[in-house]
Image (tube, rainbow, N blue to C red; front, side, top):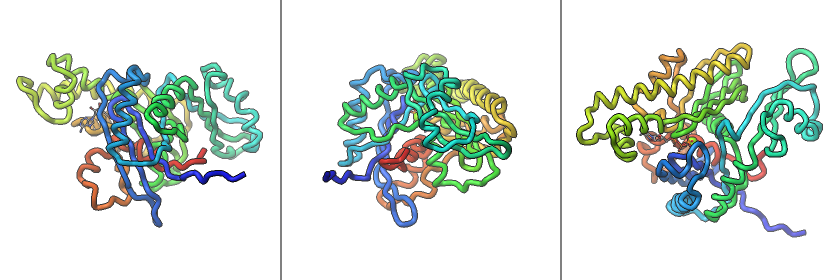
Length: 352
Ligand SMILES: Nc1ncnc2c1ncn2[C@@H]1O[C@H](COP(=O)(O)OP(=O)(O)OP(=O)(O)O)[C@@H](O)[C@H]1O
Ligand SMILES: [Mg+2]
């Protein structure tokens, strides 16, 4: 039968609780080129703890983000995250083929996933045979169907077709792969600290060895400022961005931000503790910090000092060709919040 040729082109849509980001990349001879990018800030009450509270407003925000981009493509790659809906686990099982594992993944997953297996979409990645014996390591990825439906449905209502539903941690991995040199024996922690979620993905030789999502983020900075100075969300955001608000002394702002940063860093340290408990030889050689939190003054150096690991702020456009029509300075400034969207924009229809 004749099948209509489907356009291979898609774009990445990262529906964060703080910002919606839409980003399109074009494949060029020696890599990728940025085609389009659009970012819309959301008011704080639309998406709370990863749940879409006000879907009508989120649909409107997606529509306006996409219309500002001026794009005809309807197919998008989206992602979900959050510890209550996404579980990624590395386990060892007897060596088998991909087909065999497809058959038995449900059985393997049932023993390791704390959700009802009927309530999740399952996927896996074979990481490779262990050095000794007849075991191999795999990653099991379980995502609650209800969470997927929630996001797929707002995207659909905005007139788009979600063709890929990824998880934030893996989108970051893809973004990393095209921008950084992967060294076989090096472990790098990708940490994405957004408005209300922190995703951690530790890569060893480029492959994921550990992931953990926590429900905390830079909203903590904003809420602390609102509470301390009895100001609105918008005023608190302005202070966070380095602006000023009448009657609020700058040094007091700095100390409120520092204590909120300390609370977030304590959560990141907990993720490192879990990582050390889960993986042998848990040395981490560097952190690549993504997400809006990395733009909060003092956060990155404080993180580095607290965990004793070198922290680099992500450059998601490092290896992406930027046409002259884009403001390079702007892209540098917003880079960290576009990291997941870059990873999503790299996906193609038919990818697993
Ligand atoms: N220049 C800046 N200075 C300080 N904070 C900033 C800056 N830009 C963004 N932020 C903060 O970063 C956060 C948004 O980051 P990001 O876009 O990574 O989160 P998100 O993806 O929307 O949220 P999540 O994934 O947690 O739902 C907001 O809390 C925002 O206030
Ligand atoms: Mg995010």
